[in-house]
Image (cartoon, rainbow, N blue to C red; front, side):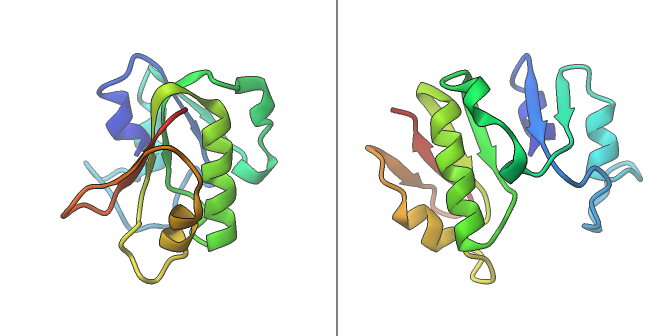
Length: 130
């Protein structure tokens, strides 16, 4: 997800506890974590999101992409943290909504906010920052 954002935004900050993901995804023979390191406009903060101090970044970001903890409680916490750091009118994207193996859908459906959207045919849903 940070790779996609890095093509459309001047600066991307990604919080990830696993740099060398065990996900068997690769592009040009490199895993996602290795590809991120090649990007000049991406800053990687290697930490679990539950341990990150979000209070230092309130209302700072134009877009946040949540694709981390897939439990309902963990995803809910990530979404609530994203709501703290998103600028008014910014977008919070939440991945894996339609995957029945994860707790993303129940977390997203519990979120209290003014506007939530589901994109038909995609596994991503989003929230507009208040």
